[in-house]
Image (cartoon, rainbow, N blue to C red; front, top):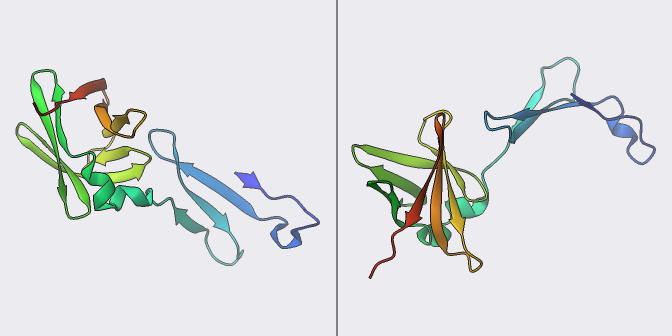
Length: 140
């Protein structure tokens, strides 16, 4: 728990307690703060980066990525990115930067890797048993 000590420039925060919360990946996903002693803490949840809901931005990530003997197909559905693997379909949940949660699967995420121009070159699937990389398939 973080404690705001007396600060002459901000006397209204003296004694305020703030607790940062983290997700299973260790990233800060919110904070809790007690502003009124008679009530419980107020919880603020971290919102995903705005660009991860922008269809124009997401459209750049759409495509096929070779993952071993399988192909992962990313497509756009409104303002959401979807993932199709053999026998699986997931709607991705935006998190931060170029990281998305894979549906409701706890401990699973995908991160897009981009080059200096911002074009995706590969994806990294993070799951409980490891990290697996898939290279972007370039149309010929």
